[in-house]
Length: 178
Image 1 (cartoon, rainbow, N blue to C red):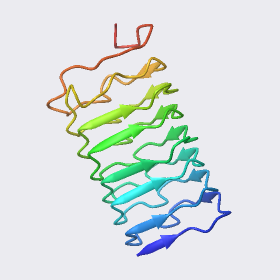
Image 2: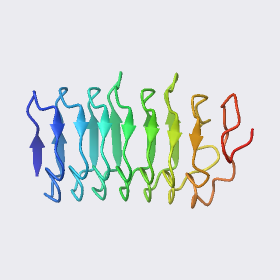
Image 3: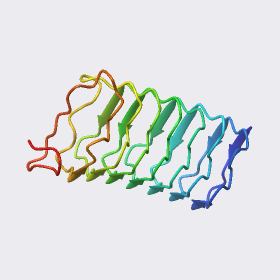
Image 4: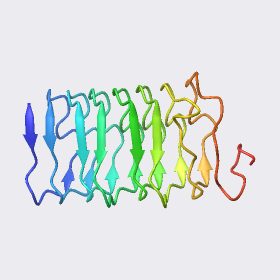
């Protein structure tokens, strides 16, 4: 039920803790990669991602009942993989400034009402249906970072109360003229 990963571990492997009914996990500050489906189908409610994590793999935390994610300050996270947090119960989210890619379906089918981006964001890509099926509103989605170079035209579909998206990019993005 409660898992503590030892210091020195740098990677959680594919399906390493898949469907284990884990309710709580403590990840060490040495972990850099959480691989595909590592913690899929668990019973986590709260999750802290150490600053050392650079990659969260595809479906890493898919369907794990997570309501809260805390990314530690000075995060090194660059990539949030496809379906990484799909079908959880998240309501708000702050994307660390280090994140460059939010992959396809990354936060599909949660209950997100608020998304913020840390200052000085390096975010370049938001993939297909990354935030589809949430509860975002015009006031709940902060301005997208000016670093953005690719935004899938359906990245935010099926958010019934989201009727506008504010781009701060200095140039047009494909499918999104300024």
